[in-house]
Image 1 (cartoon, rainbow, N blue to C red):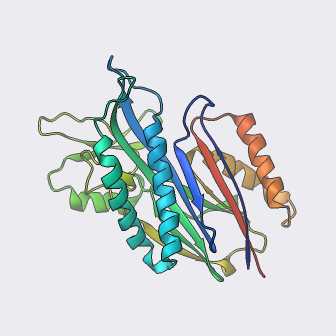
Image 2 (cartoon, helix red, strand yellow):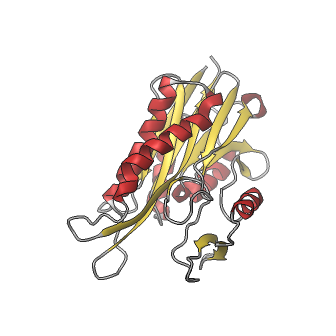
Length: 289
């Protein structure tokens, strides 16, 4: 078995840091994809642009996950791997909350959503916390198959999980201007500060623990359930529409199209469509050996 692999990661703007990160194992096929997020404020009370400390956080999470898997390469132990990485990044980055940089900008929050994929002889294994997505091409219906469900207020199991934990009734979901639910937290004075779009991930220590958890949802997909030549795409939320439109159009392509050609098409679409966020897309295809 051979796993073909191509990747691209593009920041929202060349002058801004890329809050996405990924790392790939040299032993077997294991990849960690991370989409970082956070908030910092200028001294005048306005929100600042993306922060290099968030980029450091994303890179640390991706690197630690791959290093940890290389040291203990068992898919059954992925939840324990997430636990170990969470402890390490908590110790390293939690003290940065409230830190003011040389420009007088205070870091108020930092976190990341994560998806890890491992490929074995007969299956794809996924450990998923947040809203990175895994897609498969060649679906006979709409051209692509979404293999994951985002961890947010639209996920019924997440709503039930949070309701059981929120004994003080300090959490609520509220739709934003794009009609997407965001999780809000109520302080003792009744004020609802900030919000977050996801219900699983690393970091985000203020208010949301232990309701927001790093514990992954672990899924397994038999390779025999997919057509020969199927291409899989693991992407951050900035790449969702690109992957969907690409896989719809690919329904008429030859199944043996080189993966490099597919990635070139991804690059064209990123340039043509523009971006509303950082975009990271990892393509892979399993070729029987």
